[in-house]
Image: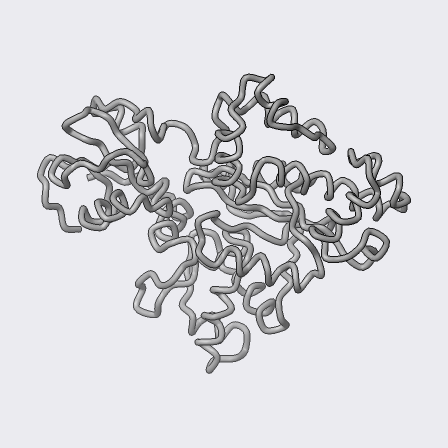
Amino acid sequence: MKQTDQSLTTTESLPDRETMYAALVQRDSSFEGVFVAAIRTTGIFCRPSCSARKPNPENVEYFADAKTALAHGYRECKVCRPLVSLGSTPDWLQPLIEEVDQDATLRLTADDLRERGLDPVRVRRWFQKLHGMSFASYLRMRRINQAFSQLQHKSTVTDAALDSGYESLSGFGESFKKAMGNAPARSNDQQVINVSRLLTPLGPMLAGATEQGICLLEFTDRRMLETQLNRLQKRLNARALPGDSPWFPQLDGQLQAYFAGKRTDFDLPLIMAGTEFQEKVWNALRTIPHGATRSYSEQAEIIGQPTAVRAVARANGDNRIAILIPCHRVIGADGTLTGYGGGLWRKKRLLEIEQGNDTPTR
């Protein structure tokens, strides 16, 4: 690998300086977990997506992780907090999140937030950034999710409305129809995809689950995420709503063990929700051993359609359950890395983790 600065401490897996500096300038979160940038003039180190003012390229030193930057005398940036997982709940918001998690029917006004010592605008901005909706919308979607669950378990519309914190049946019906697309009494054929964010060393991921199993796992900065979520909702005749699932703690635990190099497979039920051809490709992906790779042409051979290389590549790109269905293990016939929805450097890091050489030094 090209190295233009003899004082640069790096690993063999780091991108070149030009790529890393461009990522730093563009605040590219897809490089989370790939490198940290240490600023010689200030003595601090930042994550790639830091919003602070950017230094000149000659004043930046790159490391594979925060631990190495600390060992070289740099201290944590107070703006992006690279020692904390990207997407983590800030300390000032944690009590509110715990309160919300304990009561899916909670209703809080701006005055309620102020009584808790919180700025409503700051809270709204955080939820908008992390969840793509305001805090009020987040609470409303959780209440609708709660009501839908009760309706599926044969509660009456009135009971579901009252138990979910609604005082008006007309208000409940309007909110429910807006969220679910149908009136409460016509929701029997639908289902909910509970969605939640999970933190990983390579950035936050959006997880989705039905009662039957995991149906979504994507990095939150993937450009196609909204499209994929819309396709999934259509395939399952479902609506994605923020909520909890008994599958999420298991998924989170298995992912953490995977990133720590302590797990080589996953044993969670998966809801693929694809076409017959897509599911054939995705099942073939699951047969690629941990630490191994295959080419697209080899994948086409395995599913018995050797001329369908391009169709196999498209199906790979349509995979909605990253890591568990390991589309990152498919590479070019010449051994080069090819497209990956989460970013090529994430793909490279995932392969390094699986091959046990994610922290080689030189």
